Image 1: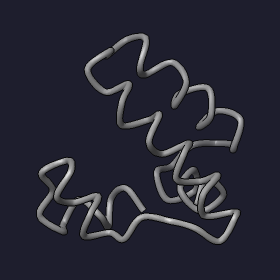
Image 2: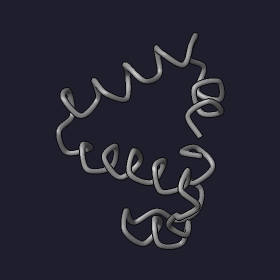
Image 3: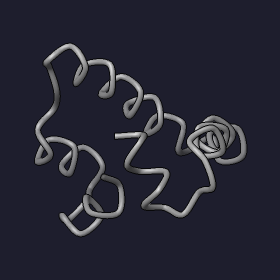
Image 4: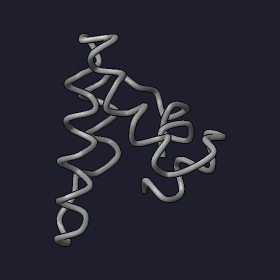
Length: 71
């Protein structure tokens, strides 16, 4: 997910995107829970586990359009 996302979002490198993702919760603490869940989901995905997109949408109040931006 990270390897695809940094390109889609226009970052110059994977490292730049990761620095941004780490810095954002500090700048905007209200979003820290989201990024924590992203990291946990990445680990779960790598282990063959995961959370269905519908569950994520429900948890964060998304309507499906955001999924395309976040994926």
